[in-house]
Each structure stands twice: as C-alpha cells, then as structure tokens.
Image (cartoon, rainbow, N blue to C red):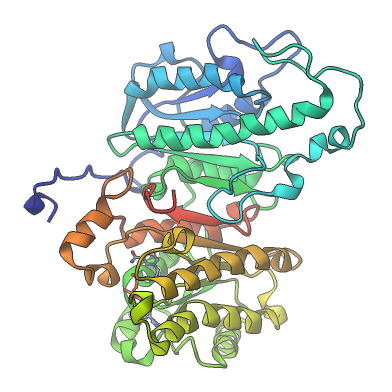
Length: 488
Ligand code: NAD
C-alpha cells in the first residue's frame, strides 16, 4: 500500500519474540556523573545509575558504563534523576548523542528522570502537589542559610529557595530533550522515559518493570512517552529472563473483544496466563464464541450500554471464578461528522458507548467487595488529547476516559487497585480501514516511526499496566502512537 503511493516502505519494528533477547545488544548505562570529565566528586555516589545497571545485569544483559567499551549497542539507559540545573543535562546529552550511531536497529533509549511541575506529561501525569515537596520548606522561606549544592560549571551563589525553581527547569528540560531525541531516531529505535516520583527509589517495582517493558519488543509502538511511577507498590519482576506468565490466574474482562484491538488484548492476556472474560454485543456472537473457544473460556454476550452491564459482568465473574481482578474498557465506536452536520444520535451514542458505559460499569463493579484490588484500563485515543477535526464526539468521549482514570486512581488505591488508560494513535484495524485511502496513508505516516501500529502493540501496553509490576503506576494515560504528531 505504501509503495503504491510512491512512499518508502517503513522499517519493521522489533516486536516481542520469546526466542530473542530483551534488547538487540549490550546496554550502556549513562548518567550525569558518568559523562566525560565528570565522575563522582569525592563522597558522591552514582547510586541510581548503579542500581539500574545492577537490575539489567540481573536480567542477564551485558551492561557497560562507558561507550568506548562497546562497538555496538542494543539500548542506552540514561539516568537523569540527579539533575539540579539545566546545564547538568549537557554532559549526558552529548554522551548520548555520541553513541546513537552505535545503536542497533530496534534499539532503545530509556531515560529515568524525576517529575517537574510544568507542561503535563500526556494527560494527568504531572504529580503537581508532590513534585517539589523536597523543596517546600525552602519555598516557604525556611532558608537554611546555605547556598544550593552546585553542579559542575553552574552559577555560584544561589539561595536554597530558588534552587527548587532551577531544579524544576532542569527536570522539565529533560522531558522535551527526550521527546526531541525520539523524533531524531531511525531504524525503529525508540526513546522513552520513566518519571519516578520524589521519594520513590529507582529500584521500585514499577520502575524496573517499566524499564523492562520499554527496553523490550513489547513497547515497539511506544515512542517519545513517559511512564510515571507514583509509588513503590507492586512486585518487582523476578531476576532472569522475561516472566512467561505475568498475569497468571488473574480474572480479566475485556469488552469489545470480538475483533480488532479487543480481540488481540484478549488473546495476549490469555497467553500471559490470565483467565479472560471476552464481552461483545450479541450481533458479534459468532466471532465472540470462536474467540472464547480458542481461549477455552466462557464469553459474555452483552451490550455495554445496558443499565445493568456492570452487575451482569460481576455476576458472571463471581459465579465462575469467585472474583474479578481487572477490566479493560475497550468497546468503542466512531460516528464522525463535522460539528455543523452533527446530529444528536451520533453525538450521544459515541458518548454512551465510549465513556458513559465504562463509568457505569466500573461504578457497579466497585460496589462489590469482589472488586477489591481491581485493575482498570480504559481505551482513550490521541484524539482525546489533541482533539481531531470531524471527531468532536469521539474526542470528548476519549478525553472522558483520561479524566475517568485520573480521578478514579485515588478511589482504587484505597482498595489496592489502579486505573490507567492507553491512548492509541493510528492502529491498523477495521475501524481505521474505513478511513479513505489518502487520509489513511497520511494518518499512519504522521509519527516518528512513520507507520501505523498493530492491535498487538496496544495489547502489550495494556498487559503491562495490568501486571503486578505496574502497581505503582495509576491515574496515567500511556500513548501507544509511535510519537504521533497529533497532540505531541
Ligand atoms: P473495532 O470497531 O474494530 O472493534 C470494536 C469492538 O467493540 C467491536 O467488536 C464491537 O462489536 C464492540 N462494541 C461496540 N459497541 C459495543 C457495545 N455497545 N457493547 C459491547 N461491545 C461493543 O475497533 P478497534 O479499532 O479495535 O478499537 C478498539 C478500541 O480502541 C476502541 O475503544 C477505539 O475507540 C480505540 N482506539 C482505536 C484506534 C485505532 O486506530 N483503531 C485508535 C485509538 C483508539
């Protein structure tokens, strides 16, 4: 299709393959203190970078701290947790730049950073209240009388109160640095980050689990994004190779599972050990039964907009398994029209399926103790972040999902659960196959990887967010969009 319009064929992305290693070569761990000429000052440690390197060694990977040691690199992990001033970024940035040509096709860059108060990361990822908590006493005027600890080559007499401001500028700078780096990559290389809340160690399960996810082929279509780890909850991935069944025994409902992205979610979760309950409308009964047969499970024929849909899902799970561990709100529809031509049926039906149903179903599930520890994943969309011409109804519904998970996270945390969303960009499905060819071709090319994603790319992100390792990530929206220019 691409060649028929005279466009070059996009590169093959490196997707998960259990017979291949986690990364296509040795991993280089860089940090501010490892950059040329820096090195730890006497008494200073490079603890975070060392801890990340240890985790990678435990994963069975070949790990180096200096680029001259390796002719070819599978991934670079850039530890930026100790940025104090914007110019602290110069050393590690240039060191990363000097090794990019050594990165193998399908390689990875993963930065580990601390949060900044500023432009939101994707959706509700800003952690604004806690971001500068370590500087709060200073901001309140409790000046210690000491000057801030100076980074190499920085200003000399900064008061304690202002050092938090400077640090925030440095941290926010790291975000756009990484996003720009992602846009410069070729050969299916991606660049992503992990933002670790202040007070949470880089050895927290979701940091290490997130690092594994971002390094692996499971994140093939995630590019220019940040996972935000807000707590040290969760179970760290075991040492050794990738876990075969991270969702072992978990009971997970997937709505809209008869085809497209939902079908791939159901299949992948089952492959990772989950007991999946596929749900779809009665009209999709044949495809739904075929899927349930393949997964040796019982499906549930149900319109998610039914007033008692949540109760029926709960009854189904309770009678068969005694509980429910997760739900993926995937069922969704589009009814695109320019607003001037929009009618009530189109507008209302999109809101009803895409956001009213997930809200009502989740509320009904949470009314029951069987849903303690519930892990919720909603399907948002990049249209819900940036808006999209002709999709006023759809964009509103998908932004609703982003708002839902952000506000639901604290409610679920109180019961040991999480709520997150995944925002796909252009994914090759029956839904997007209906877009006229020329528009479709532009849409699938408008991202850093210059191609559409596959349903399985979305499924991989959802499986990660449902895993025990991701329990420290909640209220977030993770884009699976190849760094789509829309809403960048
Ligand atoms: P699809 O149209 O191929 O599949 C949607 C499934 O949901 C179908 O099986 C359909 O029968 C089911 N469904 C619709 N209404 C339902 C209802 N009322 N009750 C129960 N089931 C219902 O769509 P897809 O492309 O696989 O998209 C899946 C999800 O991902 C949707 O929420 C969509 O908005 C979202 N998404 C898709 C893309 C993309 O590029 N394909 C991009 C962003 C977001």
